[in-house]
Image (cartoon, rainbow, N blue to C red):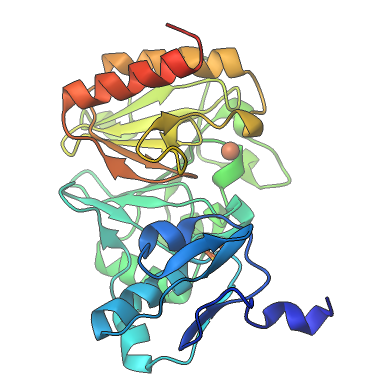
Length: 302
Ligand code: SF4
Ligand SMILES: [Fe+2]
């Protein structure tokens, strides 16, 4: 394929205002944001239906804004695009104070980033693309006091976000390096914890979850019962609705990662908001225990 033709529509798209080009990296983001319009056809995404109403177009534009590789294009109305811009960061339904940032970054392999708006200062979890449109919206929500980086893979534009808001970055010391600039992070966690969240806050708890990487940590926001799970665990595409670890993308130890899943049996959360994989709310504590036990059984660890 010639270089400029990679930006042409994939033939798999249903024709219309929106299309996905050949540069899609199959990150799944558009498909969980707007599953009625984006689907996996072959090994990449395509429009499986075209949006018909303004609301459907806005949702399709939200997927476009969050595509890490700018692989989605549209001839749709500017007003609908503007409405999509105004929706990010988007509240996670039912989880008070918790937002999905959108604008996934290719530097984080398409990972999602999250924002907690709280009295003790807002916390960004992992880093979205540093886009002026998003910066403006985050500013309107009170800016960012802390940036919690779950591990080294999903740090994207952390330095720009930290500089813009004078935020303090929190990351495990073993995840830091000079290539990504994480050696400059303000708060480095040493050892295995437990650690207090800076500012003596008791609404947030940092949990060391070694496995995907040695220094991987997740963050629990207790008031909303949201677990920011990084690349530790997420809901799978297939089978849908199951909690899974991604063993093909393990950079330290699968057995340790499974052990770190077991640790989560001690915590009370209903939302799993990951870097990669699908975010979802579980029904209740019994559902959470069942899903974690299913994962452990799947890994032969029960
Ligand atoms: S968000 Fe972009 S890269 Fe990810 S699956 Fe959709 S089109 Fe592909
Ligand atoms: Fe990762």
